[in-house]
Image 1: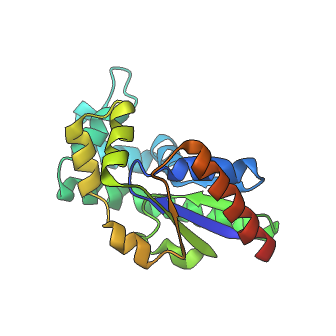
Image 2: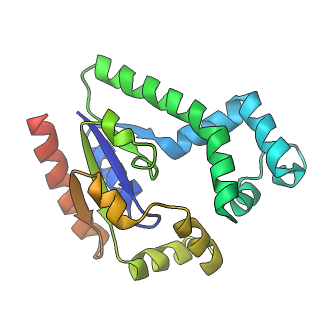
Length: 196
């Protein structure tokens, strides 16, 4: 059973992924694969510097992710540019990881904010969207150190909640405590993997 987990920024999708992983699922994190692509694929790295400029580099020529994030989410055009550079290699690696898990008959959870954007719901057995109110999501993001401007910029670059719900099989609401979400996630995982 391959389970895709998505949701708007600050919804709690990574926490749900943590729970599923603790219950035995193989974790496949799209953000980590994206970082891995940038760190290990010289063509991707070179194109990022070429398009976004040397300001995205630290003094030791490693990537300054915070600076890249600021530039990439400053406009829709820049977000699309970043995605066009990183996503092809990222999706190829994602496919490879999923195929490996399928070949071992294991359960896996794919943590990907852009799962629906990529139409990747077609490649997983079930898609879960984790939802939370705008107020709750904003509060969580501010406690993570993002500024209100960064929260708004990143939120603007995502699909609407109605779009995420339309292509998801299950909605998991997360407006309450972590413990509340933990109980719901455990119950849901058991139901899915017993069927699958």
